Length: 243
Image (cartoon, rainbow, N blue to C red; front, side, top):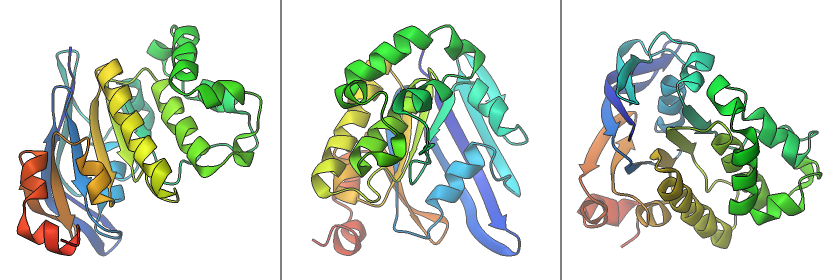
């Protein structure tokens, strides 16, 4: 059963500094939805609001998982993760002094994932053969591309229904960005995930997007009901795609 997330009129701030104003968006029924924007426009802040890391000052965030609706605002991050919502954070945020396998196992702490540790670990090693080769290597000694694979694998160990991916291209060479984006699509299709991905690399993100939104100065500036609509919007083509 597909899962969905609905965000309605969210406002969020850090102290007196407003970062997000009146943002509404959704990702439903196994879609890949992209939130596009350059640095400093509120993409990561919205991810933090979804995960309970930052509490919005106004608005609602509702997840629909296995036919049940859950209001996320006011829940702790642990409670949100327990519902089956996983975040691959910007910068990967691994445990550098732990091994690859130890980092993966830390992703499986939610109760429903613990029963599937063996099968999910096998799947991660199948999806990312390099991780299997380096399962005993310290995460901090790996390349940026390998660390991004590990961050994705750790999220999959949670056995998620909804996957949030924040800026997967940051710090990666262009060829690794392309491979990472392709892998997100592959994992989404295989796991039947609903994916919300925040990204500033417009061309790469649009390759796998079903539809998306552009956020500018904390507000949704454009909603594309398909990847084609995003590609063919004059403002996006001029200011973000350089066309």
